[in-house]
Length: 236
Length: 284
Picture (cartoon, one colour):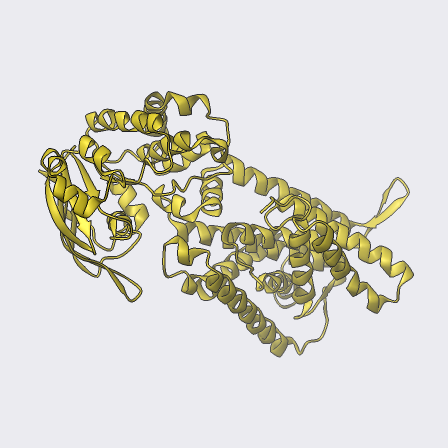
C-alpha cells in the first residue's frame, strides 16, 4: 500500500517546464530518496507535493486522495510535512515558538503530547527551547526544522537537503534519527546531494535528470552500479 | 500623539508584509467620518458609534487587502512573495485605493471641514499638576498606549499572534508549518485598520474637525515615524511619532507655521544619515 503515488507529473514555473513526466511511489512508512544533480527539479518536485506549486499535469495521490492543487495548509493538516531546503525557520522567534508554530493546527492536549514526543526525539533542541532559532548552530537548526515539521503529526515527511552545510558527524546524527521517525509510521521522501549517504539510508531510489525520472531501483542495487552513479550523480 | 496612534497600525502591516499600505490614511479618515455620520446624520450616542467605527475599520481593511494586495500575491514561493515587484505594485495600488476613497469622500463633502457637534467633542481642560491638556488629547495618549500594549499581548500571547509573527518572519516556513497565509494577512489588515479607524475617531473627538484629506498628511508622518523607528518596531514607530509631534510643536514656537511641516522630514534626513537603522531597527 502506497502512501504517495505520483503519475505523469508535469510542473511549469512561469514559462519554464521544470518537471516533464515524473512518476513515483512511496510505500507507507517507507524511505524513498530522489537523487540528481543541481537544478534537475528535485526541490520543485517536493514543493509540488506539499502544495506550494500547482501541477500543470498528472496526478498526485496521497493516502488514496487526489491532492493536486490543494493549498499547503490543507495538506499539512492532511498529513504531509515538509522540512524545506534552507530550513526556513523563524529566526527571531524562540525554539519553542518555532515548534508551537508547527503545531498550530493541533488541539491543546494533542499539541502537548506532540511537543513531548518531538522534544524526546531531539533532546538537544529541548535544552535550547528558550533560545532564538537564528542563534542555533546549523545542525541544531536542521533538527529544529525537522522537529517543526513533525509537530503537525504527519504521515509523510518531505526532507530537502538535510545534510547541506553540516559537519559529517552532525549529518550522521540526523540520519540516525530517520529510522526512529520511520518507526513511528512516518514515510520519508529524502532529497539529497550526497548520493552515497542517501542510498545507504533509503530503500528505494529515483534519479531525476532534466525533469524526468531516468532511473529507479532498490537503493542497494543502484549504489553498486558504478556507471550509473558516476553518470547521473557525479563523484559523490 | 496623533501620529503615534496612526503609526502603530501602519507599522504592523509593514512588519508582516514588508509592504507599505498608503491607504492607511484613508482608514483613519473613514474612522473620523464614521463618527461624523453617526453623530450628525444618525444622531447616535457616542458609545454606540464606537463599535461602528471598529466595524468600518475592519471592513475597510479587508477591502484594501482584497483589492490592493491579494491580487499581487498570486504566487506562493519566496521569489514572488516579498519581491520588489510585489512591494512596488502594492505600494502603488494602496496609494491608488487611498486616492479613490479620498476623492469619493471629497465629492460627497465638497472638501469642506466638517465639525463634530460640541457635545461629542472631548475638549474639557484637565489639570495635571499645573500642566493643562484637553481631555481629548489625554484620550489619544491613553488609546495609543493601550493599543501598543494590547498589540504586544496579541502578538506574543495568542496563537493568531504566533501565526502573524511566523508569517512576518518567514512566509515559506509559515506555509510549511500549515499556516494559511491569506487568513493571517486578512487578520493583520483587519487589526491594523481597526487601529487606524479608532485613531481617526479619537483624533476627531479631540479636535472636532473632519475633512476628506485629513488622512493624507498623517499617513506620510506615520511613514516617516516608521522609518525613524526602525521599520519593523511598533514601539519604535510610536516613540518616533511622538518625537515628530513634539519637534513640530516646539518648532511652531520659533518658526512660521508653514515651516513646521518641514520638521518631520528634517528629522528623517538626520536619521537616515546618522542612524540609518532607526531607533530600534535590526542591522541589515
